[in-house]
Length: 375
Image (cartoon, rainbow, N blue to C red):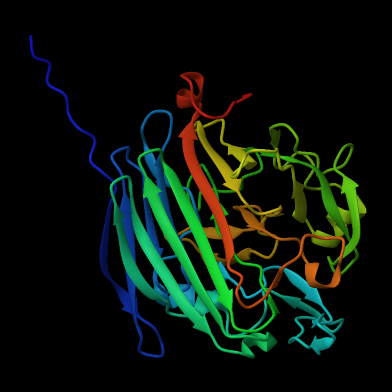
């Protein structure tokens, strides 16, 4: 007796026009899809992840990242779900390489630079090349940052490849080279809400972070150099915990950040090239996100700056706590803290960094998925 079987379609990528920037540059959207109802939409404008569509435990698909309505709205709100560099996060007072000091444009009067300053990578149109391989499909974005851009030395060549596979992994692979000694820290500032874009706050959703320590900061959110334990603090996410459980804590670190905006020191088990960094879970929909990375840290940010002035693609306003950013990266201010993992890149070296966003559900987990759920 012959039994008919239906083959699962291989991952695919398609490209279409998205719009034209205020400067007259054409922008395209690359749609990555697989045979399991998961898809991602990537713009060559800033490497923005404008959609990440994933099914819930009943198979209902929603976009689980922040999404805005059109290109003009993204242009007016740079940094949302986009690539960040040359140095993601904060540096205070510039930095010194081989005895030569480099000043950076400060974002506040006390000399703190956030996300490197202008031109923001998230506001640039990157070169793009479609990627099609037997088990994955995607797009490779590239950009040449000239010597001195944002105040950083060296001509930087950056390649960022976004791919989707049949395991529901959206993977970001970074490759960076330089022609002069410089510092580099790259990430994508994507915000997640597993109940769906614009659905309200994430406080009842749960978070687990594979970290026993975080980088203690001063009032400017610049690390002091101390690696402090998370145990007994509002930053203890060593097991799945509601995101809103301690977000109103009066602990000094929470007051400095006005919520969560902290770098966690990730555990790095021997022999695991891409260990778990974080797990986010929505008990209502059953959706779960697992984040794996080669990076030493993850900055957890609870969208503290949102005040309702930004409107999502589905017409609702976005407010504080409506999404959670999980920025895989090196620690803030590492160039000025010798105790931290180095971000120094020299000619002849290549920076390689990878992060995987794996979407699943508690239904899949109970039938033998990669992670675990404690509802």
